[in-house]
Image (tube, rainbow, N blue to C red; front, side):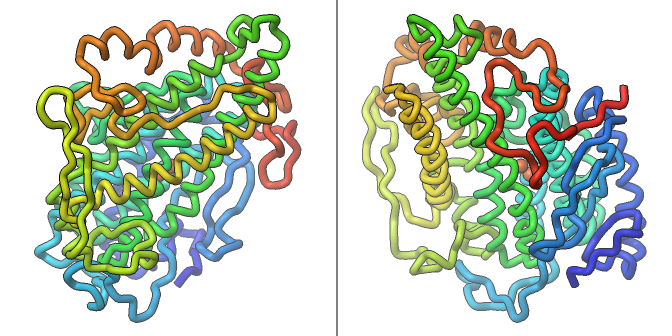
Length: 474
Ligand SMILES: [Fe+2]
Ligand SMILES: [Fe+2]
């Protein structure tokens, strides 16, 4: 099953050759994908040779093949993890029944919606990041950006395969729509808020890959539990690629912190900005921004959709097998819900209706682990400043806290106070302009780093840090 036929137009391990109709439909979509890539993918680098990892099979050691590739020649393929024999639905009302290889009619709309929503995030992030290469801090970082970008492109392929293979005409129309919406475009925006936020500089890029790609990890974990087996197997494979994206984010922020501490030591009043670095309070504001917009991606705290997805076996919890009870009918979750004025009142919510919140809770814990590692860097450098995750109520645009105001500690505040103080908590236009001012010129010379960031601990795939990760052809 996992043998990949690379001589085909579309590399795949789903035996596309035996389904000519599907093969032709995807071959017709392919040039439109490439048009989109050339229009909305990384600007100014389409002819360059980039040292990229390409999936060539799903075996543990075979899927990561490294070589120089022009991005438009990247072998975007369709890979599902191997089928588990006699796999059974692991949660919800249909617990223990065999998983489905085709879409059950009664779940067609819900599954399509889940797949389109996931699929839409993939090209959206490529669009958000398309101009970052022009101001890259190093060739190493430039290569990592492009690795993330081509893999998000492949994630789009993964979802488009499901739409074409299992959802007929509607699926083909949705696949077109995925190439038509545009991040941040008010006429045809991407579906989810965080994927319409501008990502104008590398501090935002690292925060995005740390926090927003991590939402992706949790959505993929939940979908990899699905009773719709092709979805489960596709998302399982996507997770292997997602891990690198979060690595780029975590190490990127870590390297900024390292450099900021160095620059603070140089300055008599420990002023990182005066030394051309990014000061710690500004970094905290970007944590607050990207974490809060990413929390929204999990959906409402109280959600009947989430309950029905769980009941029907469409979307489980992350690592469902670690939970003792897979029915989730008896328990409840207590939430702090906005009441009258500025008060919060406790409300018990049936667990199935709180599934978004359960997944968000796992995400919060996972996010904290990286913060702990970042704080170790600060501690080692002798700084007393510590980065913190704000409350999950802070700066929310969806769910029960939307329309209310909270400070980073989660205390309710009036609109007036919010307006007066939000510039202490979130990046202001001046912060944004300052960060961008540090990133005016790109650094392409191998081994050289921008002033505001420390070099990475090591290179990619055993290569030195000063390896020529991108061969500019211009
Ligand atoms: Fe992705
Ligand atoms: Fe990603």
